[in-house]
Image (cartoon, rainbow, N blue to C red; front, side, top):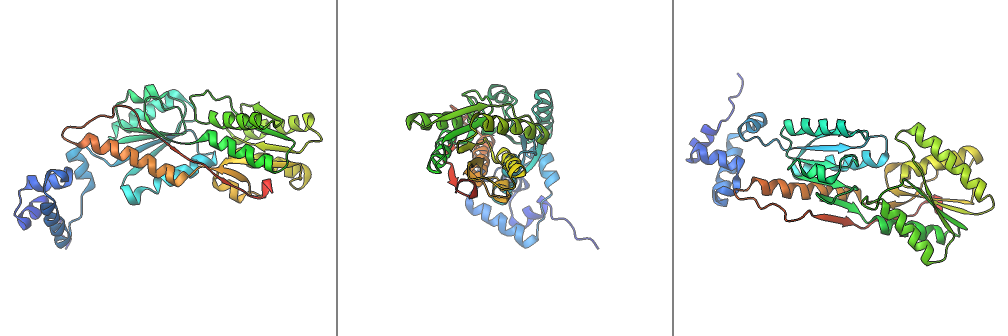
Length: 341
């Protein structure tokens, strides 16, 4: 015979509380005393209560679901960051619905509408496609990571310091020319700080350098073709110089490394490479890549914590909206490997 499901009525009968009090324990525990919370918790253990999540969602509309929108899963940074975000389940209990926007604004708007239709309690946005002003107009808890964030809360890395760290390690490696290749980011995008930090360090220290702005594309084929052109240009302009190359991320740094190895059979001493992110590909490359590491585990934790605070505030009887978005910035960590030794 199937075991009878324990109901609120059973818990109420066991504890002597009303069903309303039992419901408040699940939906708004702060509204009852700690002593009574402990009594109910003990009753749940004794009665071997198994929560019906679907019934709870239908009753209070709270799903414990978070929507995540990333640009793509091709870039190692996004897949690694997503892994760390999902890993926060053990601490926060949120479940995640993930969409890849592929830089299509209309598609991302449809994704957000669908996420809201499923009563997701907040959003984590890594995509650059929609402005923070537009995101804020959805009036749901939002935290962004490494993107423009004027109107919403965010967690970012100190990209300027990352640019300085990359230029520093390349200079110490004895390079004759320091090169940073990146996309043409506006100053509102955190990644622009990598360009500025790299350039400022070189100019301050009188180092020959060059910023090479490129549209790398959105697929491996496009990335590979553009980085092959980049390598050819560097070899034509600086044929006799030892080149230190700071790539915008570890995925692109690994593509550059592979192109050089295919051409020369190894990584020549005249090339020094630094990536950004400390994603798994930097460790798994044929020659492990020196990288400016984002503290992805901490970024994911801070993002979910900041989102959880917003969600919890909204559940209060008299919520107090944030007077201004909260922006958290974490320090990058330089990780030296084979490509700058």
